[in-house]
Structures are given as C-alpha cells and as structure tokens.
Image (cartoon, rainbow, N blue to C red; front, side):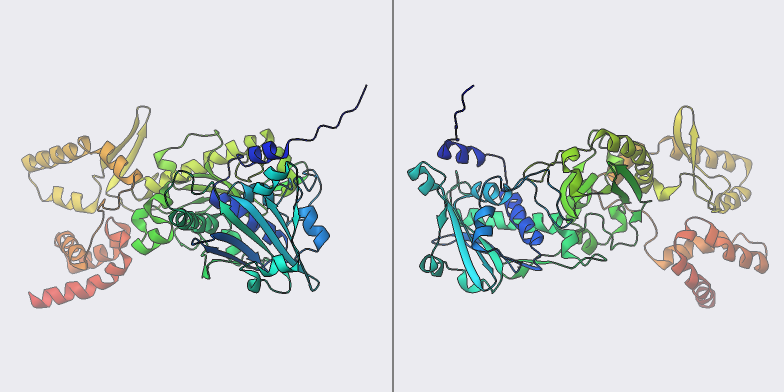
Length: 490
C-alpha cells in the first residue's frame, strides 16, 4: 500500500468553510467567547462603517505570544475531545477563523503579552493569489499602520475584520448594512451573554460595549420581577456530570407595567420564546425549543427552562461549530419529559382566570370552575353573598328571572374569544375595579342588606374573603373611612 499526501486546495476549502452559516451576530459572539476564555473583564467592539470600514473586538485578556498567536490562527488548532477548563467556551479550534472569514476577506489579530506585541493575518485575496495556506506575519511597521493600535493596552487581543463582502452582498450601502448588523448584534449579545453581563454569585461581571455604549443584559427569565415563578431546581446525572434544570413561569403581561414589558423585549420578546434555554458554561447556545418533547401551545408561552450543561458533555449534546445548536441525549430527554409535564401545568395556570384551578384558598369566589368527564365549565357561584342577598329580596317570579339571567351568562360565556385574548398579545382585556368609588358602591349595595349595625360590621370584616373585594386589600383598608364619609355627606 502506497501513501500519498493530498492537502486540500486552499482557495476551494477556505471559501467552502465561509459557508458554514454564521450570521453576523453569531460570528461576533464566537469572537467574544475567545475573549472570555482568555480572562477578559472588558470587551470593546469598535466599528467604523465609512471609507475603510472595519469591525474590531478588543479585550483586556491574557494576550498571546507570537508562537501562541500563530497556533491560534491555525485551522483546527485544538482537539475537540480534550479536557478543558470550566471557563473555556471553545471546542474545535475553528471559531476565530471560520466566524471571522464568514463575514470578511481580511482577518487581522494583534495580541500583547509580556511587554511584546505580535500580529498575524489571513487575507483571502493573498491566499487565492498564492494558492496556498499562507499566513501573513506583520512586522512593526505593518502594526503601526493599524488604526486601532492605540486602543490596545499592554496585554490583551484585538480581532479586526476588513474587506466585507458577505455583509453587503445584494445591498446598495455597506454603511447601512454594517449599522443594521451591529444593532442586531447588540440584541444578540445582551441575551447570549446575559449571565456574564450581570454579577452572578461566585462569578465576575464582564463588560461588553459597542463604540463605548455598554450592552445591558437581557434576562429571558425576568428574575427581577417578583411575579415570576421559580419552580424546583433538578439535577440530571449523565456520565458522572450534573446537568442543572431550573424552570421559570413568567407573569402574564396583563400583570406587567408597560416599562416592564419594554424591559423584557416588548410583547414579542415576552411571548415568543417559550422552551428550553441551554447554557454551556453560562453561555447561551440554544433557546426557544422544546426539542420535540412537547408541542408549543398558546397557554405555555410563558414557560422558560434554564438548562446548564458543562463543556465536558459537548459530544453528547451535539454542540456545533457555531455553538448555536444543541440536542439533548436520550438519558436527558427522558428526564426532561417528566419535568415538562409539571412546567406546563404551572404555565397554564397563569392563563386561568385568577388561577382558580380549585377552591382550596377559603375564598368565596364569584365563579366556580367545574370539571367533569365532558370537560371544564364555569358557573356563577350561587352562594356568593351578593347573589344570596339579592335572591332573598326577590319574589318567586323575580327569582326565576334572576336564575334565567345567570344561566344565560354562563351558557353564552365567550370562552373562545377570552382564550384568544388572554393567551395572545392583548393587553386591553379589562378585568377588575379601576377606582375606590366602584368598590365603595359594591360594598354599600351589599351592606345595605344587613339587618343590624353588628351584622354590617361582620359583613364588612368578611369582605376580605369575598370576590371581588379580596383582590383589593389596599382599597379595603380605606373602605370604613369612605363609608363613614359618605354617610356623613348623606
């Protein structure tokens, strides 16, 4: 058997690798992964869309020597199966090169370490001309000509993109395309690195900015909102490693202020991405999917599940080069199915009117939720004090008319329209009392049926257990004074 070395054609292969499928924002995120792995605490994205347009990612990490930088510029510079530290966000040793060259034709890296500065460059035009894998080593004069050189400190690395051909393909203005791409990048980074942008317990906060404008973290779980439900955390053991699963149920948007909805990314951002959020070393790699373990439903839009996996399980989760796809192994899927059932029930309750799944709260409800073999129905609670008192004041014929009216309301309840409004993006589904005066009028009507002052006081005290009064404790505190004022005025 003979041996024949057959290296790939440089021009053909490198252009094929450009078509891996990186978006602009995903490519920038891949570069930031390297900065975080290098221990950077401050990562600055600089860009100029004018004249000689460029985008640069500059960090204050450990930096690299000349030989280390040369190795980093090698395609496939590491073994994907090697054991890595918990802070390492890479795997294949392709991200820096593949991500960068998917967006531009000239990639320059400058790195400072131990008082010296080195620079290397992949230039596709030069490679095509030479027809070989020719890496350029920049000398001092070449480095001095680089515009962002003054922004690089005594240690750290700058990754510079130039000669953009993919970003502006089919567009009339490179300037507009780059500005739009950086806007998308800001949103993308605020989500993907949100756990790095905030000071999580035990971890250092990392700052990321675009042209000196710092990126704020976008928390998909709305942990800052008191109405967000945090369900029980579970651990799944796979190959001796722990996978941490923590479910969240977001509050319905009807319970949020406009400013809170904007903070959550608007109505679309609040409701669009139900499903699992898979983090690899706290870096988000996949989100908005149930991995075909369940169907997306209107009533589960508010369910989010944080899944933390270590980089030692990359091979089982099928993490791709772009770190944008992950698929759970069978052992994990079986456990997630069990967890999903519990999550979905909690999410559906958010859409159930006031959460009345059962009447174990000792409140007197205006509506009863009735479950039988034929399904679910809602009926007016005939034992409600307001209805009881009204019925007691009516004659037989009037009682008959009242019951007919209540049945009409129950039978004609617009269930489908109500479902669509509450499960959709509507915020104008009005529900509740707007002013203390409305509550006062209802209270006076109910108290007017009391046969004595003592009975009235007892009824007033019991309003905290009767709908709708029980939902407005602050207004109830003011009721005695308001009733007294009205009695004096009358």
